[in-house]
Length: 258
Image (cartoon, rainbow, N blue to C red):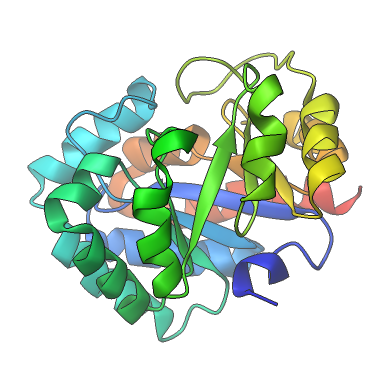
């Protein structure tokens, strides 16, 4: 069983996204360690990009802060390698095609494998263009996580058949960010995936409260939270690790009851 699959083997998985280098790579390292202690099952390390099209204002601002602070892809690879010496849970990179393409797909995949990461999420790659990247990552034993959106209905089975690691179910149209209400029929999305393939499904985009996490985890195998955590980092800066840990614990405790 891959390490990513293992994240879903002990009840509902809680998955976190964090922008690397906001407020600094040292603080990012501390946050990741604290998240693991607080019950995180899988962590998405965001590699900042100057034009993150899928992100809302909270994560966009974090990207700007990180890049302004001098964060580079190579520095993030180094940080991830250091983290892997102690962090046991699965970690994947989340970034944009342009970041991988400009670095060199093969070189990026090789470096990702060398750091001990488990996979990658590229939200701006359509299914039809995925193989150019996925075939290279597969060569290095890395999963390329597929996303399905509320508008993907007729394509869900096609995407699910080739999905690796887990399927990222996008709960809301538009960009990332906290939402007061999520109205998408997640049960139906997950049902369509499971009909094709026995693969874990995790729901993300818009989840920020324990109540939302419980509702979404009831329909899927896990929940993904990003903006709410990135917002804490923006608010507390160097002091954010303890606040992120408290938040993660409250969310994980909530979904443990399911």
